[in-house]
Picture: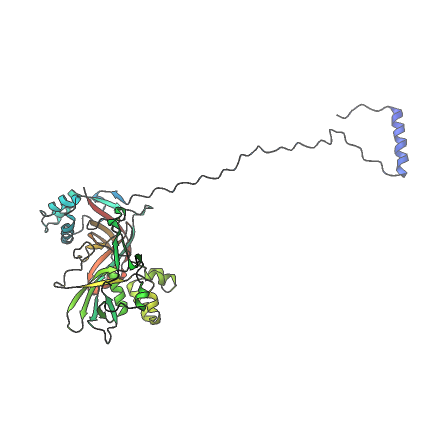
Length: 407
């Protein structure tokens, strides 16, 4: 602390003399600050910070159950649907399902229901079944609903003229292994290929079959390669034989084992079609405008379907689906059998491709398809004829699905 005591007089005179003498010489040194005045302010350190924690990895949420039981009141349009139109399709399913324990009682009771009484049919389903709303693993309760139909092609028993595109029988060297017979957890899974020595290798792709035709396995020859491709997509169809005028059914027999690829998606990825403008009609129009690229497009799908011929005694009866019973127009759907029991009743709520009106009705899960995968996914069978082809080609809508399972 600096002193405040006053200095003595002699000391003051001496100090003045020294200062005057210094005026003609070098400037006096700066006064030396006292220790107190030179003291720097304390540096305040922030409080110590602990180690920065790395968030622990979080477990992904468990997948949402594929099925959730609900009441029939949760089904939009259930009370308005004319269930009499679906009853014949259900009885067809029961011819197969009745052999399974879970379905024995419901199918036996169905035989006592008056097929002409809509109210009685509704009471029957509400008595013996519980609706299960289908959801995807991430919880979505809507999915893609598409359509298919039974096409008509022109064909010949022999190659010639316009008839240059073959529909093939199952090749002799195609090997099919039912994996479910060895591994029960792989039920409904099949491995297809051909034997090379003792090893099963992949069977030929579409492009490979086009380059090396399966001579001797031609079932019929048709006049349009594009319609032949779409026949494979539909899974079955009819061919009017040019020589005789008869119409035969060409039914699904087997497949080459390669996954189904959607050619419409490829056209979108290539910038050839807008994402919201893909339909069978727009794809055919693109091919007509780009004939040199037709095979390039078709080869995008490596899957190839082999057929068998069936008689067509009744033109009003649909083709057989994967369940082994005839499909009923607008009351049968194709599903993923790994999620939806094949043959089960299914309530569908979507929109009609003609006008966007609500399409809410009871259907039967009687078929499968290479592109039909997941719990909320269905392919609506429109039947045979011009309208069926038009609607199926344009059907691409969101929809909800409820599977009816026995109590």
